Amino acid sequence: MDKFSAATVPVVRIYVMATKAQERIILLLSTPSSVADIQDHLGISRQRVTYVLAQLLSSGVVSRRKARYRRAWIYYISNINFHPAENLILSDRASNLLSYLDCDRPVDERDLKISHGHKQYLDDVDTLINAGFAKRINIGRYSYLVSLLEHCRPITPLALKEIKRANIIKDFGEIRSQFLIAFLTYGKMNSRELRLRVSEDIFRNLGYSYSQVLQRLKKNGYISGDKEIGHARYSLTIYGREIAEIISRYCNDKY
Image (cartoon, rainbow, N blue to C red; front, side, top):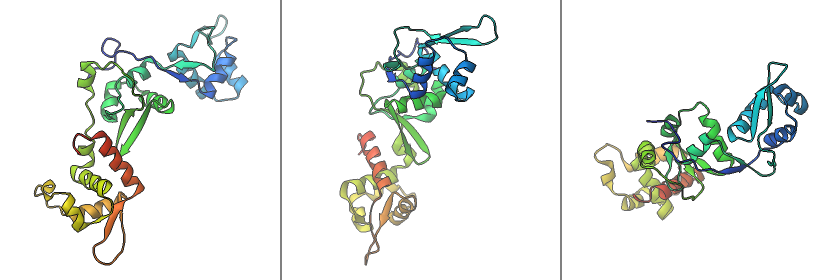
């Protein structure tokens, strides 16, 4: 896969509010300062100062130059009309990352991380999540990203070819997915009632039974069962309902 580039993915310029740490440093940089100056004045670690300055440099709010009489970088505000109470621009990396996300198109983070190809991938994801532009969906051992913005972003054929729609049903398991959707649709059921809702054809001679799947779902915390006389009746747990609603929403072409 090719990495992000301006030639392949159009940048969607998005603005986010400055964090408290960014505001404090921006206000201090009304007078050009070095990392050591900022550290001494704010009383925070050098690593934290360097991290925030890197964010501000990538957004174009702050610039730097070599000090004249000492071996250090001097940081200053690039835009004299900038006010920290206003918005910051997302870096090109974060904007490009957002350009691959849709509100109805979960993307597998394994594929997204490979295409992003940058060691600060997790930082860029955190930026989008903290700004309210994206959310992470965790199902089992897999995680996906989906946009929270219903923006009309341009999607290039190359982007659609590189980052395919995540197959949540395949990752989670088709049989387990159908069981959770059945519980979401029909509510509390025992194994006999479930047989009327889910066809035995889904097992395809795999050697599984309804009881085995139900016990595994219960063990993993997706369903809970009561102890009434006769066949136990099962219903979705809070966690199981959350997963079932995710599958129903993003895989509605199958269920």
